[in-house]
Length: 342
Image (cartoon, rainbow, N blue to C red; front, side):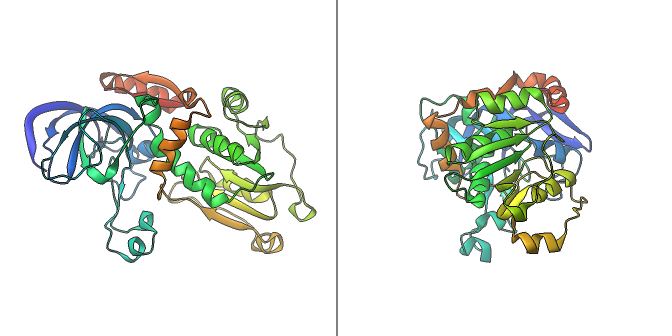
């Protein structure tokens, strides 16, 4: 990449186990790209996986940040863009090759040549980032930069709820009420489901009830085991934790004929023990989600509709120079979404 002589501060994966603040040249915008001045960038669980070396496709020394919004600073003269300088934009970080069999069959998120802003190429935990014009989508004026930075994770949840195929009146269980789980609760409840939540944090359980549309909430271990073959359990179960025990719980809480959606990102080496006979007897559909196909524009529309107070997801805000403090808060899990405002 061509670079300028101007420098900026970025948060980069330099060494396994840490994200460090370093100086890096401000990128020079190339044909087909727009330069974005970052306004808000959320820290994600994927960033933690990257820092630990648990994301096989992440590039070494990459600038993290795949959940971000910003203002269009510059558009290369040879770039055709649907936005203009000064627009607030959300970013779709996943850029497919548009040539492979998956891209040609409307499954671009499974593209083996996919590059991801903030994972395989430099991302938005910085002051400026140059991105393909196709990655940006204009954000309506009633959406703040902090809320706009939620578009990427929300687009992943849009895909998850699509996979769940919720029908009006369905009983829905969401395991885990972190930011992704709370988004799933909101979309499931507005899709006509009656949502039950299992979550260890009292604060998150209360958020699920007060803001995001849950009907009832429980700490882990409170709900009794069910016999899905007798009509007990849930029509749709979303696992939003990413651990083997909760993945198993999701299967065990499903009603016969139900759908289980594994949303949480587990470690590569994790394994789950489930009974094939139980799956057969209950005729379960077990599916998963990978990224956010065709979801970013829909997510921006959901945010703009403001049927949910999406700002309630942002519990902490820090300057980029305070990234170390922000990372510590994120690691404690004490809040919800930790946002960096460069």
